[in-house]
Amino acid sequence: DNGLAEREGIRMRIVGDLALPPPAVQGAAARLMRKTGALPRQRATLNVCFSYTSSEETVTAVHELQAAVRSGRLLPYDVCAEALRGSLRTGPDCPPVDLLLRTSGETRLSDFALWQAEHAQLCYLPTLWPDLSYADFAGAVLSYQGAARALAALRRAAEARLRQAAGFGAGEGEREGEEPPLPAGRGLALALRVRLRLAPRRGLPPPPLAGLWLRLRLPLLPRGAGLA
Image: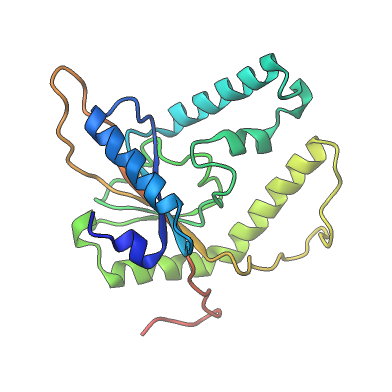
């Protein structure tokens, strides 16, 4: 702990089944989240997915909704996609992933952020995580820039279908065939899937591979623009 998160105003969240790591790791994760969660000036949120799989996250969210219905805290007809999204380990305040980078040359998601990256731009890089360079990152951002409007249209169409299924009409200002504007003021939500070597505990299988989830505030480049 070198204090980088505190100096830069980065809120850290360890996302995953924290009952699996050793107690020392659990305690360190809890202290880090408590310390950075109390920062008075939070500029960004970094989700570190550790001991995490998307399928386990989804099953846990479903169980939480079931418990809420049984206890009367939630009515059965209030169970919807939005309620499930808010019950995921990433929480209701986590924006959907815009750009997902997968390093090491693997062309699979490995059960990582499947719900959150539903309409994300996927970028598979042959580079290993420790060797990821500015040029690699800039190229990935440019690939997102080219697809941003189409991805925004897909996301808005999916949200409109969910609203209609829940009994609501189309959102204000939406017209069929109209190209939606790019999201403003939210920045770029980046998910980075990396391969790490983790030592397994004796007698237990190795924990799931870790991932990083960083919300960045990067301006979108005009169409046709490049990075110097």
